Image 1 (cartoon, rainbow, N blue to C red):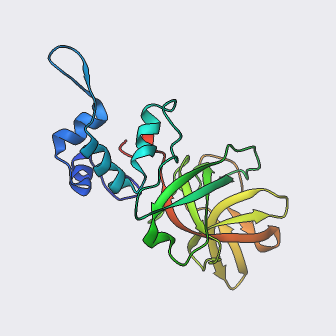
Image 2: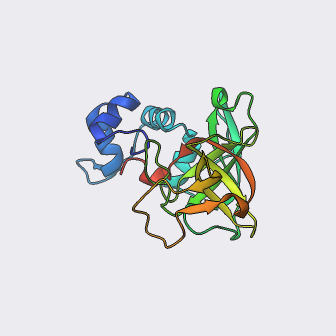
Image 3: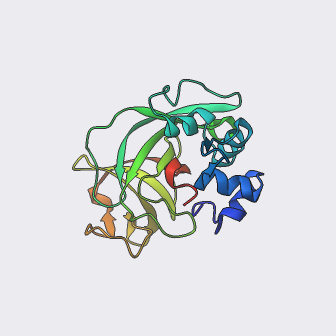
Length: 213
């Protein structure tokens, strides 16, 4: 909701095209008169999937990971983007990663070469387009970004980071977007520390569990 600039569940319900009671029941749960849990309807799952720009199978997978892989089914009009690693919005990342994927619209994917990364750290959780800890960023490798845009970069020490690209009289460097981030890494990364700009962040997908919190 923060990424969508939505302040309440009621507003998110309107955004998703759902009744407010349906939205609250989906988040908080509902119990029938005989004491059994009432699960969200298929229509509710599809409405939430469209609003969050994820596949319905991704939502179902979060409810029951043992049921089937989240990326087993691709919806018409969507495109599967592979997650290939983690990036640090804070300390750089090079830790092992279990490959998976996210679903985006075909319109977003058109004319782009997309890959995705999981973000670790909160140094980009600020500004007009915050990228929170645990989010997935979709990156266009054909676009290396321009000043004040979020990018993924590889540093000379091999670590991967997600930062804001800044170009000024001192040249290109990377900055944090969140002035209150909680890790101890430097807020500015100089150009001579950057090995390669992988690409510009074109889409942010928050952890499904936190999208309505």
